[in-house]
Each structure stands twice: as structure tokens, then as C-alpha cells.
Amino acid sequence: MLWIALFLPELPLQLAERSAPQAATPLVIAAGPSQRPLVCCANAAARERGVATGMAVGAARALAGELNVLQRDPTAETQALHNLACWAGQFTPNVALEAEGLSLEVGATLRLHGGLLSLLSRLRKELSQLGYQVAVGVAPTPLAAWLLARARREGLPVRMCQLLDQLPERLAPLPLHLLNWPDEVLQTFYTLGIHRIGQCLSLPRDGFLRRFGSERQRELDRALGVLPDPREWFTAPESFRSHLEFGFELTNTDMLLFPLKRLLRELEGFLRSRGAGVQNLQLQLDHMSRQKSFLSIGTAMPERSAERLLALARERLGRTTLSAPVLGLGINAERVVSYDENNQSFLPDARSRAIGWTQLIDKLVARLGSDKLYKLRAVDDHRPEQAWQRCAATVDHIPPTPTLNAPLPLWLLPTPRALSSRAGAPLCRGPLALLAGPQRIESGWWDGQGACRDYYVARNPHGETLWIYREHRREAPWYLHGIFA
Image 1 (spheres, rainbow, N blue to C red):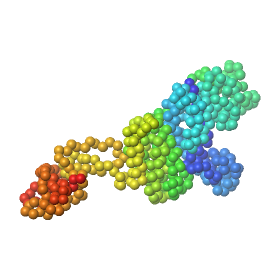
Image 2: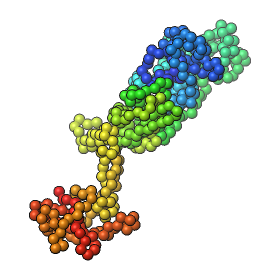
Image 3: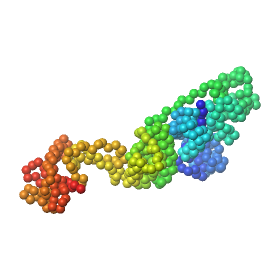
Image 4: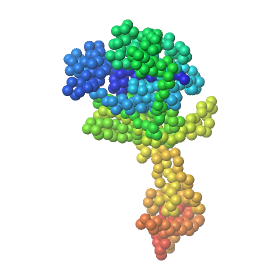
């Protein structure tokens, strides 16, 4: 087995800075009692002004008057790790949630990703695109991987370890405090002059057990692979939701594209892990007083590319006027569908041309709106005005067209037009010659829009072929209902 630990230090601060490019404004995350909140983490701009972790927020404001203070949100942190685990499922099915990050067991998937170095490079690059800064540790046991990741975060010179028998050597120089043992236990070790994990490993096992207990020894054994250290695998949900709080107001839709791109990259990773795509995506815009507005983005075929979904969202947001400033942004993909990856070819084939056509439809719908671009589908109804319906252009499946026993015109008038007649014969730019008919229709008695008509195909002296009818009653007038091409 081979484990990769993804350690996200100062996760509350990273979540606050994900929604916008890093700014020079001092920012701190506050936690603790409301009467005297404390700084749990601060960005670089705040630290330059002397703000430190554990400091009272009031004292931090005195050092940096323009300080931006956000309250820590443990629920948002848990959800962020949950979404990150959904994203990481594209690299390995064995993902475990940790308190400050993720553990990935990648021993069986290294060849799929081109080896360990290639996988690590891709993880670092894509996590950076998501807005996360991670410290990475690699070891044959999950605990050892976490110790190496924490040591790397502290700037210690550590190397990844792929072989179990190399673990004692790689863990030996690491400081004891990386094990997160209680302060009183660490103080006892320091009193004895023991500051490194290697010094603990060199102690007699019996004496270590008597002095420090079996719990500490078992933890060291788990790190070295002497004892098993099982993890509970993360199970991806059936739907995906992600959300970002800005901490400031956005009044321009263009400013939403940066955080939206990061959310869509998370969604793409989740969909890749499921081998799925989406045909409908909902954007949620948060306003003051917990008000929300929603925008829907649809595609004609299942899609999962963050770039293409972002292009559709850009078109949709470009024709949207914000009713109020936006304080947060979320995406909801309630239903995922199966997705067939398109194989690339040197010469375009029928499938690639069809995909290009559907992507053009998606873009036009996002730019013009579904009321401007739509599809027509036939309905199983004999009344001509009820025999078709509009449907969204992004609907992929349309029921088959009912079989027609008689020719119908391509152009149907919105409202039948009354025709003049001479001795009961219809006229339209001259007398009409009846070519076919009657085609009798008696339908619609159940919905109050009954039709009792006889339809004919007729032609006038100018060669125009028309579709006319008269109702089932004596001396009923003639109507023009359609024109053949």
C-alpha cells in the first residue's frame, strides 16, 4: 500500500481566500466566545502588521485598523473537506477524510496516472487551481504520511518514503510534537531530553510501555506499519453541492466567474470519479437577509468539462441583471447521468460533428434564452394546432414523431384565415381546385376545444398548394389553415 496525505493547514483561512485572488487586505478568522473572540489564523498581510494566532481580535484591530474579521464556520470546513473528497475520487476510489485534510491510498492506481511523480504533480497543480495550499506526505502507512506532510508544512527537510523498511530512518529526525500527543506527555519526554521520534524508537520497548503506556506505543507501531491502521473509506453522494462565502459584496456578474471556475473544477472532479455528467446545473446567488436567486444552465448532452460549463455560465450571467449585491455563490447538481467520453480523432467524424452542434446549441440558449431557441416535437393529437409543442433546445431525448397517414403542410398559420367563396366553392387568389380530401378530423371533445372538420389539399391558379377546411355543418365557411412548401 502507498498513502498520500493531503494536509490543508489553516483551512478556515483558505476557505475565506478561495473566493477571490489573494488581496493585500489584512484578514483574520476569529473563534471562541463572542465576548472575547480570538484569532485562530491570519493571512500574510495581517501577520506583517504583528497579528498573531491566539491574539484577541480587539488587539489585532489595534495593530491593523482596516482588519477584516470573519467568524470561523466549522460546518463550512466539514463541507469543504467533503467536496474535496468527492473531487479526489477521480484519482483513487480509496479516499479517507481526516481532521485537516485527506488520505489517499494510491498503490493500485499509480500506473493509471503515469507513476507517483506524475500523480503528485497533477494533485498539486489541480489543488492550486481549486484555491487550496496543501502539504503532501507519501509513505506506506497513513500515519507516517501525515507526519511527513506536517513536517513539510513546518519547512523541515523530509523526503517521501515508498518502502516500509525505510520508515524508521525517514521518521527518526521528525520532532515529537508532530504526533499531537498531550502537552503533559510531551513535556515529560522533553524533560528526559527526548525531542525526536527516532529517540523514542531507540528506547527499550518494555520501559517505554511502563513509563508512557500502550497507547503511545501503538501509535508508533501504526506509523511504522507494525500494527494495522485502517481507515473508513469515503462514499461519494448521488448529487453534488458546493458553496463559497465571499465576506464582501459583489455587484458585477463578471466578478463571479473567478470563484465559479473553482466550484466547477470541483464538480468536474466529482463527475470524473463517478464516470458521469450533468445536463442541468443550478447557480445559487446569496444576497442580504438570506435572500437567494437561482440561475439554471442546461446542456443538450451530458457534460462535465469545467471550461465548457464556465463558458455557458458566462453567457448566462452576461444577460443577467443582479437584483442585489451577491455575498455568496453556490452550484447544485441534483441529478447526474451517465457520460460517454468522446475519443479524439485526427479527422472529424459524425459523432464529433454532432457534439460540436450540440455545444453550439448550448451556447446559443445560454446567450439568447430558452424562449428564443427551442425545439419542436410532434404530439399524438389529430387537431393541427394541438399536434406540436415547444420543448427546450437542450432536451436530448424527444419522443418519436407519430405516424401520419396524410400529407401535412410545413407552414401552419397561427390562426385559420376565412376564405371567400363563390357558389360554395372556395377562393384564394382565384378559384381553388381540390386535389385531395376530405381528411376528416373529429377530436377534442374532452377538453372543450372540439374540432369537427374536413381538410382538403387545394391549388390556386398561381400554383400555390394550400391546406383548407370547412366544418361539419351545412353551408359552413372555408378556412385556410396551412401552406405547402
